[in-house]
Image (cartoon, rainbow, N blue to C red; front, side):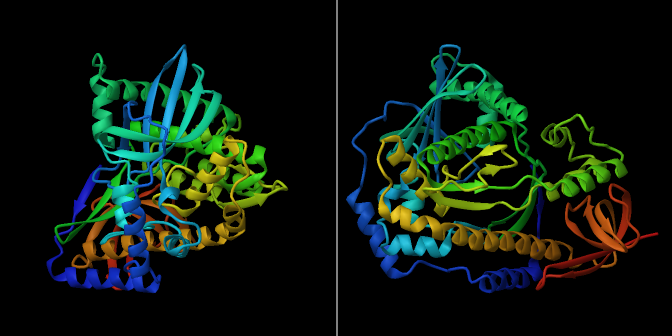
Length: 477
């Protein structure tokens, strides 16, 4: 992970004001209504825990550093030549009474929003960062998925039930990767789970490749606040993050299968890219000097790209055109025409982050009922048709918060450097302007001039407006 610290001094107030304005423009909530907080305190005091006890199982959580809203805990052991995976998901439904205060507020929010000045949680923090969070060495309720997999990682059997669990360790991604790289330690159950994850993750990734799935791996830009100062971080994922994501994908695929078999639920769907979109992207790869072979599945091609190479970074950004149209599809009785998530190359559902995403709570309750051969509760069935619109609106606000916050911080970082010349790579171009990635500091911004994607260029900063987040460069001849 690369970090670019902002020593902003005189720009701090302007940046703080700009970020506050973004929150106001997006109508993001500042706090929970008193009735919601009172209800949260009441349900937490009731301490709703399942009767089944799996606290002897050594679960471990793997999350970004500093996380306190822990949705998932995993434990893996050998099962013959294959794997037994237990995946515990926070039992948020136990703390949310249907159609009561917390439920109503969560439907207004849709998800947890992450801003540079802090997060806006989906649920009161007494729930999301305490009573329901799978914090280490504490007994918590969870929906426990149990997967029996063969040696290739293919599913042989799936069950889902509620139980008490206890995570024995909380690891950041970096800590988990270090544990894996250090190798085995005899009779260390956490290290055993991590090493089996390092086997299972690539096996599941190979199954994804064989079914035609793809993921678009490009460095993230993350804005964070430390001691009153902002930082802009550009980071690429560690292998353990990708392996951990494969367990989440496995769970989402099984949840989708269960709901389709039961003919009730809500899927995360995305259509296949249109043929002309694929053709345009293929021509772009040829123009950038790294052609996409006709015989190679697009998932394999995208996985082969090196984001550190300017030409291939430009291709990675252009590949975003293949990943459009994602949404949520609810059904009850008649199955929908569109059930596939094209990037996953399978039906898929969001189900592993109920502390942070509204729809996951509903999917968990539906799947638990269906696995017990019961009908989902009526309040769930009544809510399903409303969820796609709620999630679409929430996703839009989250995307705008992220992009506008990054823009404001980038402008602050560059505000006293107007007129300077920087090295950059061209990400995309059209007519007399395009987008460039500046090498140092690593920001993406609009640039005027005759640009060619993948080209190394010199650009001059002509505008950096904190209030609007507008940054503009011009090509230096």
